[in-house]
Image (tube, rainbow, N blue to C red; front, side, top):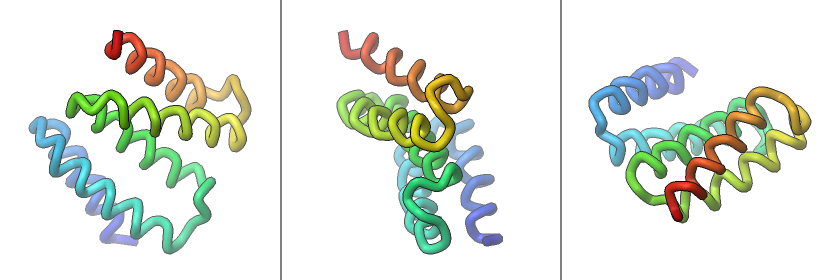
Length: 102
């Protein structure tokens, strides 16, 4: 678990220095580690997926960000319901991606 916490701290450092590719790679590794401990619909895992989608957006990979955010919105709706802040945040981010695509 310490490794996972270190990954998240490193992720923030990478984001702050605009090293998006490395941040995405780190989140991918973190997701694999987290999947060993929690089910696929666990809020922590969905949150990491949300971060991955936002890094994809920052990288300019809007099509993949859109695809991932659609999944995330559904997962958050199943976990928390349609009006929870996490659901609404993911929905807002999905709307921003749609806007950027047009």
